[in-house]
Length: 294
Image 1: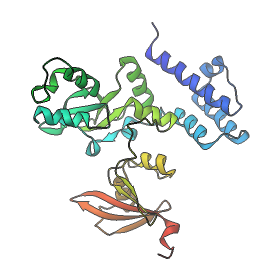
Image 2 (image 1 turned 120 degrees about the vertical axis):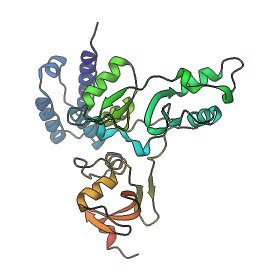
Image 3 (image 1 turned 90 degrees about the vertical axis):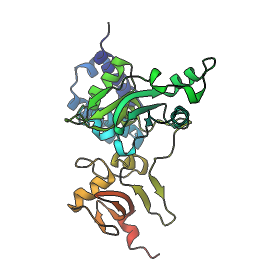
Image 4 (image 1 turned 30 degrees about the vertical axis):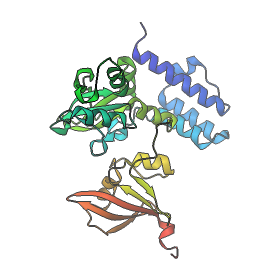
């Protein structure tokens, strides 16, 4: 029987060969198997210098080599941005929440949004509703919910991708060292780190981000830095903070008040809304736009 790691290695190697082929560089299966990550990365850099590959191709290749460097906490959907279903809600409310969600899988919580007791798949819900005589107001959503799978927030993306493939599960709940829920991560989240955004007919624009007429961007504080970088082609650092609010707090070394403004990394950040110790809304504009006449 083929191991999950073997399957993952072959899949990654095939993707590397395919992407390098578009740049005119060809590597054999033996070369890929024997080469170290550093050697492959060097081949990638050579391809970047000598071939006319576009930015998307380079980003996909670079994403492959970041799987060991990144952790699930870097790509997860933070708990403050999670959409879930309260199992204590009336059944018809829970059913509507699942069917109206843009996501196919949703966590079920009880008592607190951080107490995840299950995961419901929209397909399983639709199958249950199709049973003769079943009405939404009498449906017990917990009966066909899957058990939640909890993973440490320090798990590398490569290990998590391998675990997803072995278990044939696409959804997991991320917890810290104390077992506290930090967010959720999906197979799609990891694949998007490699190949870029995976769009389908149900995808929404990035949530919590709004383009203003004056060229500025208004963002929720919980928006991940990596999402903004990917969608807007920015390069804000994400080593010390995961969210935009976290980045502002880290750089300012304080919890700013509303209307305070900071300039770093080529951007002007203005705190629009603060709730207790959380920065919930910020305005961002490129520094060169700050001096532009209004």
